[in-house]
Length: 192
Image 1 (cartoon, rainbow, N blue to C red):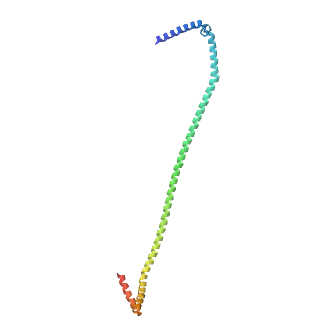
Image 2: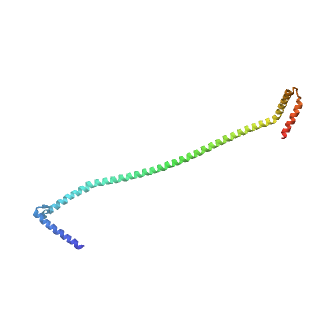
Image 3: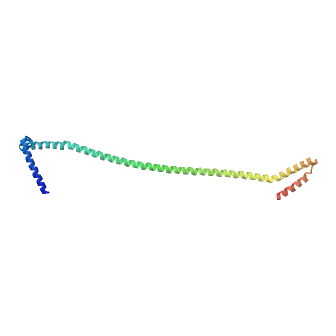
């Protein structure tokens, strides 16, 4: 490897010598060794001035712009992170509000349902009480009619029998004998 490097250096040296002689004979002044020192002087001055201009004027402006951009980007990232955190907090708050609203709605529904069922049960109970009262009144009337009906039936039977006998035979029958017969028949019917 070392051998290859040495061979390359020798080849470059030989090429530069042959190129220099060719340039001198061809008239290229920049390759003429006589002008090399003046060229190097102006090269150093030109690149020195260029370096000073770049290092003192252009590069500080570029570096300030880069720093400004970097700080602005970092600031924007901080603002974005704050806004993201605020958005997440608002989302959690909205989720909590929605959850509370659902629970409240469910509780209101259950309370309304319970109230409605209680109201229906109380009205049902009142209605049943009224129906029971009406049934008791009707039962008492029926019992009263039952108790009074044999007397009325007997009375009607006596009157009807007297009228039938009077119409059939043409004679007024004795009410006491008809009453005894009707009473006897009604007592036999009660025992059956």
